[in-house]
Image 1 (spheres, rainbow, N blue to C red):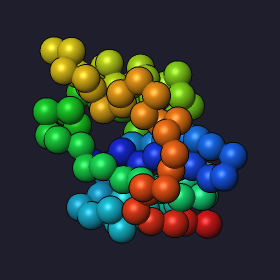
Image 2: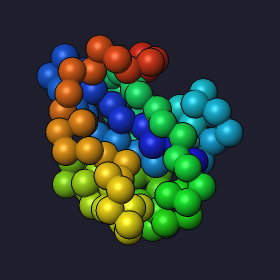
Image 3: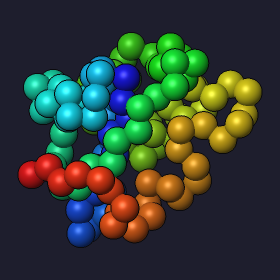
Image 4: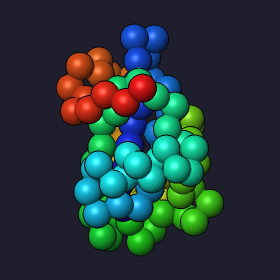
Length: 101
């Protein structure tokens, strides 16, 4: 399961959580289910302990910043920082590792 975060020159475009064995497969899945808004993408494979805590209604949908922060809390009940640190999604997206249009 992968966390994909999307951005362009205007900033954060959204994020989604999709299944896939690799980043490339997750990107294909994001297109197939319609949660890829385009732009640059940064993908992070979810650790199993976080992946099993993702609510089914969060899978395969484009998440806004508020929903991303909620997912971060939901998948980190011990309070270790979660998937999304404060402001992380709004940081400069030069470090994203793939470009999808």
